[in-house]
Image (cartoon, rainbow, N blue to C red; front, side, top):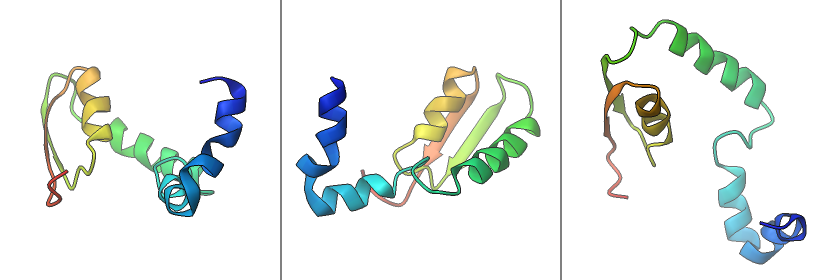
Length: 81
């Protein structure tokens, strides 16, 4: 995306889309604290290729992150999408 597209992104997606985007991971003002918490969790995981269950995985971004690092991940969420 060109820089101008990035600048105009929230205006193009409207109020509902902007509210959704602000609710995504890493958009929170406490992002640094959350990343530190996640790092603490990752430090106690067994080494890959351990099997992991990601309950409440939502869109699965954490599952994908871990799978790319060699884990065998199963994600499950109550939401169908």
